[in-house]
Length: 365
Image 1: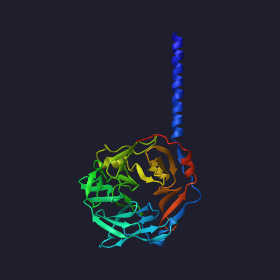
Image 2: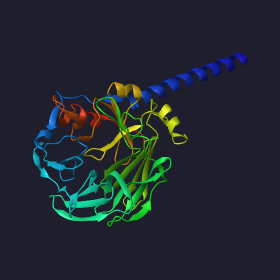
Image 3: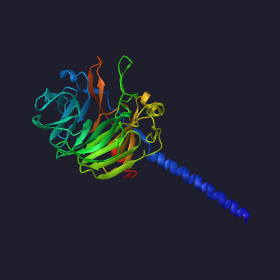
Image 4: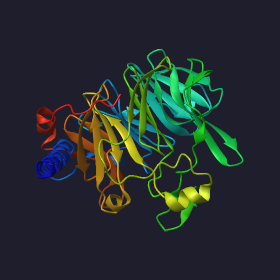
C-alpha cells in the first residue's frame, strides 16, 4: 500500500509539472511579443521645411482627417497626402491670437489651443476663430475636449516640493467642475538635454515625459500616471468606465515608485518613466508604449495593445517611438539628413495580418 501511495504521489507530481509546463507554454504563446515588420524604408511624410518649422512640439491627426504640427508659436495644417494646407491662428494679444502654445486638443468639429496654460482658444475645423476663455487654474500641455467644449486635463499647482498635478474636469468656460484623482507629483520627468550635452533644465530623465499621460478618445479619455501600470478610462462626465491594471505578462518595467518619499530616491532608483505614450489607432485600439532601460538604448519600444473595451490583444515591438499609428502606418518625429525636423512614417507590412489572426486575450477591466 505504501509503495502504491508513493507511486500515486509521484504520478500526481509529474502531472503537476507537465501541467505547469503547458500553462507556461500557453502563456508564452498567448503573450508572445510580435514585431511590426516594416515594408520598405521609412519616408518623410511631412516636410516641415515648407512651413519653416524649427522645432516640432507635437503632432496630431484630427477626426476629420487633417494633420496638425504644433510649434510654440505656430500651428500648421496638412492633408492626408502630407501637403501643407496653411496655418491656424497667429501670434499676438488680440482675440484668437496666442503668445505661447503648450498643447492642443480636438473634438468632432473644433480645434482647441492651450495658450500658456492660462487660456483656451477655439477654432472651427476650417481654422476660423470662434471664441476664447481664461482658465481658473494652470492647465498642462495636452488635454481632451468633449463635443460640449468641456475639458479633461492635468492642472498644476506649485508646492515646496515641486509641481503637483491633478486630473481635472473643466466646463466650457474654463471653470473647475470636478477632480478625478488625488494630486500626484508632476515634476519627476521634465528634463531636457541640450544637443551640446548639458542640461537645459528640469530633472533627470532621458525620455522628457510628464508624469501624467493623457489619450483622448471619442467619448472620453484614457489616463495614466507614469509611476505604475494602471490606466483608467473616464467619460466626459467624470465617471470611471474601465480600468487596465498591470502589464499583461512579466516583463522588465520601471518599478512602482508611488510609495517612495524623496526626489533623490526617485532619481537614483528610477531614472526613467514607465510609459512613453498612450495612442489610439483608427479602430480605437489602445497602444500602451513602454520600454525597458536596455531596450531604450537599442531604440526598441514595446506596444501593449488593448481593444476599445480594455481587453488585451497582443504586444508588438516598434523600431521607432510612435506619435501616431493609423491604417497600417507608424508616424514619428525625426530629422532629415540635414537635421531639419520632419514627420516620418513607416508602413507596417503585417499590420492587418496581426490583428486578423490574434485572439482577444484577457479582459483587464
